[in-house]
Image (cartoon, rainbow, N blue to C red; front, side, top):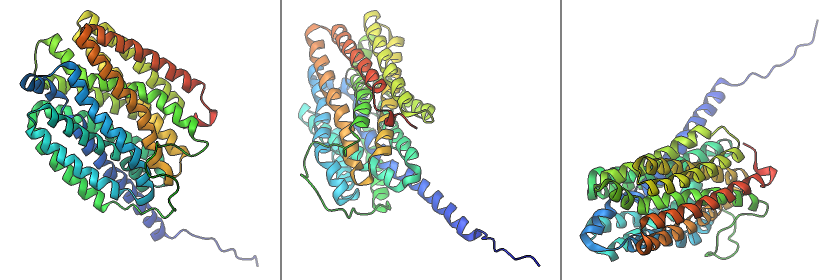
Length: 407
């Protein structure tokens, strides 16, 4: 008689439970991305309306870029605080006040009749966006869990550019009515944040609460590679958002917000599509592709203003969108793969500080140069500088650490 052997058979109920738990986690990744989308709808909703406000209130292209840059100032100030606070006290205590500020910005935009009101609304929008790109994107990774970090990076990044593209499109169609719709979207985001299954951090606080955000030792190379490509990309899209309506107005001889909104929408739609298209590539390839796209896009921008060509201007916007999208996805993926959850919001903040500083400075400089020497000269100089920065970004990625080149 041969000996018997016991074989362990997986419990069907246990397997079913694990499957349901996985499906629930995936649903929460999508739900957690919603506040990111909602706030980024607001971030660019004013873009098609600037030409109208410029005509009604009366201000120069330089003032227009200053209004746009106030958003960057609020965002950068927020990033100095929100990432560290989120990692120490939790995602919800950062996200809920940010959503409240975003709602206040909607009310101010809807009733704005002076430059000061536009500045305050942009400042509030920037603060809200700073909280979302640090705490909100980290929350997406938190609910995803260790096994879905790649999905979390993709959805967080796509949520950002999708919202950024929807805002101008809706504003082009609805005018100031977009801010009423946006208030409803933000209310839904509040509900999502309140219900979000994220835990309060338990690690003790270390270091200053307000500081330049950074990454743990050993992750500096990944951060540098991400910034090197993300910064030129988002600076290119910032130029299209701030001065693109003026360029279109001159080329098409129209102040219709629909044209400007549509161009911004297709720019960010391209950014979203590019991210889904390259998601299975290794991070190094994604970043290099982003640098190449931004470089070619700035060449198209220079050609567009020199030849007074609307098709070339649209091509420049699409390439800029793809460059930002791939740079953003590559940068977030690098951080998600190397930074622990206890420092992830701060790391996200560091990536965005590196990106938004040039995105605030260079378009403002181009705006005042355009006032002094003409829009063609301002756009040409801007495009040439950004082409050089994008090329340098590609070289940084090529020379980056091998540990940062995986999938």
